[in-house]
Amino acid sequence: MNKNFYITTPIYYPSANFHIGHCYSTIIADSIARYKRLDGFDTFFLTGSDEHGQKIEKKASETGVTPKEYVDKIVANAKDLWKQLDISYDRFIRTTDEDHVKCVQKVFKKLYDQGDIYKGEYKGLYCTPCESFWTETQLVEGKCPDCGREVQLVKEEAYFLKLSNYQDRLEKYIEEHPDFIQPESRKNEMINNFIKPGLEDLCVSRTSFKWGIPVTFDTNHVVYVWIDALSNYLTALGYLSDDETLMKKYWPADVHIVGKEIVRFHTIIWPIMLMALDLPLPKKVFGHGWLIIDGGKISKSLGNYRDPREYIEKYGKDAVRYYVLREIPFGSDGNFSEEALIGRINSDLANVWGNLVNRTVGMANKYFDGTISNSKVNEDIDKPLVDDISSLKSRTDKLLDELQISKILENIFDLLRACNKYIDDTTPWVLAKDETKKGRLETVLYNLLEAIRVSNILLMPFMPTSTKKVIETINSENNSFKEAKFIDNLKYTVSKTPSPLFERIQSE
Ligand code: ME8
Image 1 (cartoon, rainbow, N blue to C red):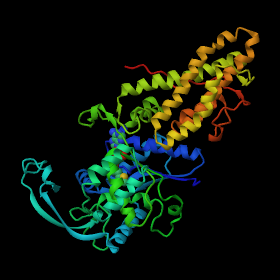
Image 2 (cartoon, rainbow, N blue to C red; image 1 turned 45 degrees about the vertical axis):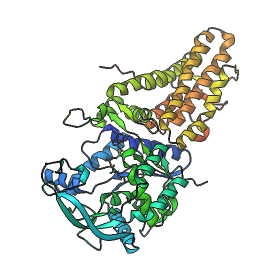
Image 3 (cartoon, helix red, strand yellow; image 1 turned 90 degrees about the horizontal axis):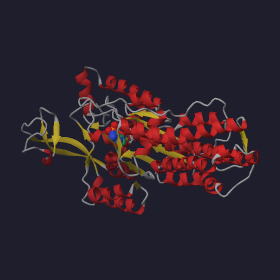
């Protein structure tokens, strides 16, 4: 079996209004990358920033700095945020990186030389004061939708990518590879709404602004931002450079994690570029839903914009990670509010997980001075719990392959909930009163520690900080993925002074 794994996030537009929804693509990709690493895969996890384009050029000039100065500042900020969220990327690529610029220029030239890119004329409706192109349908009463002035029909010399040549091949590929676009609903949307109606050749260069990668053989033109941005997945592996070792090792990508609104670019333009370059296509493009914040309207001017760091500082990085992963179910949107975040912390992290660890370790200290080994007196009531512990890894593996991250967390927390019920059903405090039940009491606590240990191993990719704390609390040395099953001969010596895993939060 191929034990290499290549996963990417979208590369972000440098934005000063980076909100908690933006963090989702990166947190989910980080969790999957961590899972694969722990599962023995040689993993490459790529993220970065998408820095070119007219919008950036304009924002920089408004602030009186160069575009590069403008993006440098925002990128430093993004890197800091990823650090605070424990994002374990192998490379942070910037589209202004020298190797990327070279890679894009070589890709563009190669496609031009072989006839997939040709020079033509871009015709469009143009509003000169706004410097914007519009389509007929975007106009409001025939005028510019931004400023209301007259628009002109203009022609601009431009390069085009022959998407139309690849239409049949792409359609066939998508149909023959049902896993390529996930979830299924997005696949149908791409085929029916975009591909079947017919692909038009794509304008892939611009002359109306400068902040982009110059076309080497026609320097008036800069490369269209999406051609530039998508190529990042290849640059990072050294494609068309002197050293293609990573390319040989990791391409094709196992999964591109992308938000639903950019599935179109990743499943039409991107595969066609790759077909033209004669490269295999990524195994999967996963289009996730959004975190809907305050009904979808979020901006600094509305006063509801919060830097994600505020939540991290207030509630901890793992609570934020857990919340977004748990709240966005496969293929759908999730909702965000601070109230709901507090609700999740209290109901799942504090009441279920924290409480279970606390109760179990407390009883191990109280009744056995912290030392527990299995006395192997099993009763019927233990069996379902032991089975659930042993099957947890294979159930989680399957859900991870399907990218059902929210479901994974739901499943693990179901097990933790079942443990709290197991305590109520087995009543250890009653067993403790009867010396002849000492063996039974030890088994009950042992089973609970096993559930805590195994669930903790599988939670490591999702909540790297809290799971370390649990390892210290139960003092477990058996924390590898291979040991994520019920083992009946361990010896636990739990911490005498465990600190609480998650505190309950009083809502204001
Ligand atoms: O699209 N909930 O960058 P971007 C969940 N540069 N995800 C969200 C979200 C929300 N509320 N808001 C944003 C770009 N995102 C391009 C990518 S890749 C070659 C180029 C996600 O900064 C969004 O869906 O606009 C996307 O996946 C990511 O944040 C970056 O968005």
